[in-house]
Each structure stands twice: as C-alpha cells, then as structure tokens.
Length: 305
Image (cartoon, rainbow, N blue to C red; front, side):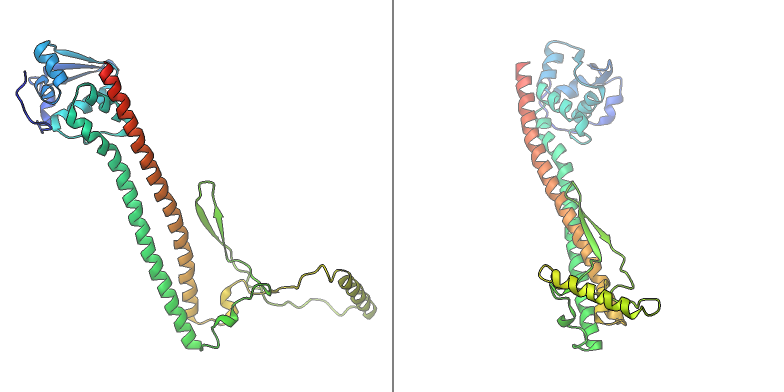
C-alpha cells in the first residue's frame, strides 16, 4: 500500500522522463506506450495503487485512450494540475479520472472547460462597455459642436424649423442598414448627389407656341382625370443634411455631422457585439448542461466497469 500523501501535489513533471522512476507502462489505443512512475500514479489513484501494489502489474492496457490523452493524464498526476487539457482530449481525461478514481482531477475538470468560455464572454463584455463609453463621448462632442455652430451663426440659422416635415419633404438616406442571416447589422454609406435639391434649367431653344399650348391642354386634362388618385407631391430636399442649413456650413457643423456619423457606426458595432455576448452566454449554458450529462454518463460507465 502506497503511503498516504495528500494530492494533488507537484511531484515534478521532469521526473516523467527518467527511466529509473518510470516503472509502469501504459499501452494506448494507437499502439503507443507511455511510461510513468507507479508510485506517483498510486498516490493519485487508488485503482492504480491496487494494480501495482496488490496485483504487481507493471503494464496497464488503456487501449480506448489516445497516447496524447494518456500522456496528459500522467502529466496531471505528476504536476497536480489540470492545466493544458483542451476540448479535444477532455472526454478521455475525464473518463480516465473517473475510471481510476482520481477524485481531485474529476473536480478540476469543469473549470478547465468553462474558464475558456467565461474569459471569452468577459472579453466581449469588456469590449461592449468600452464601445458604450466611446459612444457617449462621441455624442457629447457632437452636441457641443452643434451648440458652437448655433452660437456662431445664431439660433435663427440652426433650429428645428429647418428639419424636414413628414409628408411634405422627401428625404434621401445617406446610409443603409442591412441585417444578415446571423442577425448581424452592416452599415453602407450612400454617397450624396452634389446636384440633389438643385433645380436644373432645360437646355435648348423655345418651343413652338401651338406645341406648348397642346401640351398644356393634355397635361391639364390628364391632371383633372387623376386628381382624386394623386397624392400631394413632396419637396425633395438636398441629400446632404448640411445643405439644409445653407450652402456654406460652418466648420463646427461639419465636425458635428462627422461625430454623429461615427456614433451611428458605434451603435451598429454595439448591437452586433451585444448579439455575440448573448450567443456566448447561451453556448456556455449549453456546454455546462452537456458537461453535467457527460459526467453522469462517464460515471455510470465507470461504475459498470
């Protein structure tokens, strides 16, 4: 019987490469062989302790586990930690910990998987908070610049009376928002038409008077026939909102527009990141449930063996 030593303990991973200490051979599924100290494994596992001390076994068949998984299992026993265990070999390590009754390793398996997802969620939440702070700063700067422009030109030059009225003015969007299949938003900027909102003169000479009169009569009769069906025509405004306040917008007004455009971009980023955080939390909850189910199955299989 191996002496009572409290595990987990750092016995030193460097001892694993010593042929003097490695008295137990572990046979893996891919015809590999992993050598380890029977004493160190016995300290960690009462099952291996019985195999080596009572049954005097010098070789143990672990044929359903890969060499990489068995090697990591031995390293964990030597170092007393579950560090380095990834999802690829998690199931094998978890099953070995249950089969060989390495109690401390069974308890440490859940944080190994969950920590990765917890840190992922925390990183995204941190980025989310940072974007919110940037958005607040950008909007604040935009309002300050807007107030400065109003101060420079006077309240009568920049106020709500210059804003478009629903049903009267026609507005051309300067940006379009698309929603992908994965519920992600993307912003597309529309380049303003420099000639929008400007009336153009018709080229060419004067038309014949009879021709003009005839066209006028045709248009008049057509208008009378469809007057009930027609809706009131809307006045098309300039595409660039800066032109609503005059052709020579002050620098502060231009800078305010730039800030608010940047705010829209930040809002799109925040919305997408919020969706990613919600998906990560959902994945984490699913992984936790699957982990508990998997542990229950593995424990049941170990008890049957």
